[in-house]
Length: 304
Image (cartoon, rainbow, N blue to C red; front, side):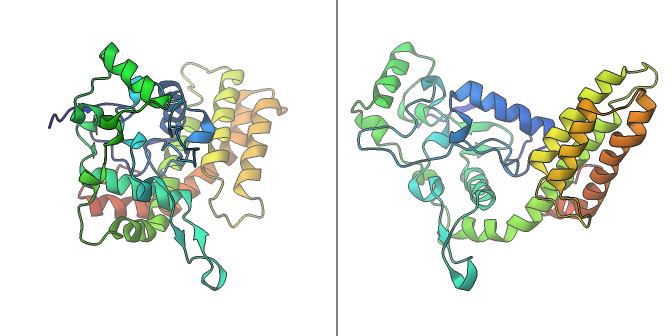
């Protein structure tokens, strides 16, 4: 069997569990859309997984799940997940044990764990080229045409035979990834908050360079982007303040874009200082979870 690996979005050393920074998450979201051709409603934006995950839906008989994906990226294992991994479990987590659909965060962790443990994703070498394992080369025009025909509903026994469970069934306990994901949801979420907050702190702190005397409008624009990212990526952070995270960041973004500040110093003493204080508190509150998760993986935590 031909073992070929490819890079897509991640770099050597990147784990699938936890994104490295706020901007990295945003860039990868945009890159994934451009590379795959999928619309945003067909992939996740949860930074708990370092890359977006395609969302599987019910399709009519004869219709391919990812017919709209560019054929040259159909080598990617995320487009070939078996039903138990592509779908969400129903779990007795509701009131009085009522069934609820597995949350996106838990599912994302489960997918990241299984892909890594199976070798479908390698931290050092990237993604397994699934199509290469059956002799199909996405760089060959004839093979690309074959993939397109299959995506359009054509019959292809070889493509229909692809089964990633050959790689994924590694443990006698079939629920190991679900159990692990359930245990990791809270610490991984807190760790991700800390990492995102830390990266946004750097963005806010670097918005003004006194040596270059950064113009006020440039500082405003940077803080507005940081606030927009924080409002989406950190909206679930619990705060003791009466002002919810989402409302706080909406206000900071509005003040950055349209606030009445005539000098850089006034702006930095106002919205920028507020933003930095909020992010610092969040980073410091949850950084212990980053260290805990890194120690479990046997690697040092990044410096806070």
